[in-house]
Length: 208
Length: 208
Image (tube, rainbow over all chains, first blue to last red):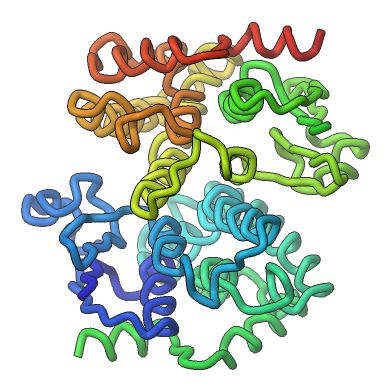
């Protein structure tokens, strides 16, 4: 069985859980509370020296970091990973783009607005930058999704799971999601996929 | 022929050029000067709406962003991309790790210290954070490289090219590279690979 060290409410943790659920891969979750500093505890650092979540322990005991490496590892050979070479390249492009141009702005804005609002005022300038850059990313995604039902190959793939993680909670960071019609309709399509489960439900269902 | 829009001295641009050179893939380079604002010019935004470099135009005219998606696209099927599933996963893990835990700290510290030093003083606090986090990343890499000749599968792969890009110029950002013996010996091994070429030489050779 796979073991995922994860934090509830983290888009990076959620996307790995969602993929395993949709591929019917058995897994258990060990909750790590970032807010309580548990990612830096000696016990956790002994498991994952990088001190980050998610962290996946494979059935053979090997540990794997980086949520998108997990997605690619788990999806390989399934219907959620394209076999066409250029479609595979586009999956890589979207996943790297998410980590370089999307998540670094949307995730911290959401964190300091919705999860740790007591730290918001002192970061007003930084939040303004995150909003500008995050909205630029959302505009790019929206442009693509106004013309395509899904990110790659016009069908649901692991790229959609990767991007859905933080996009669908961007409104919690005061990104005006409802202004992005392409994204809104895409999110509806993602939510209609077999075995889809919302972020907080999946966390509770698996931990139970 | 492939066309790469690139900026001289950028680790992300260099790694794509180095891979194409080592795989003997013909390419031309169009220089885009970030410091002159050329990534935001209307002409460049018409090519790459994301306004970043590198940007690769494939022989069929399709454009591709994200340096690591380029590496994976170009290396697939070559001796620089493993075929073993778990080794492939480790390549993904290192490339995503570089973009999330390494490059975001090492690259900006180098930029404000070596390339735009006039902006250094007003960023002293931020540079201290980048140094702390960048050194944490270099320590992790060093640990691995004290025990392994290369990052994945004990032979030179596209993961080494991906990580070499910014690691080998980290001293320009005042990271104490010579303290990391594992990294130093690995850099020597990378430099000894067939058709290796230093960053500034490759930029000049290709543009010529």
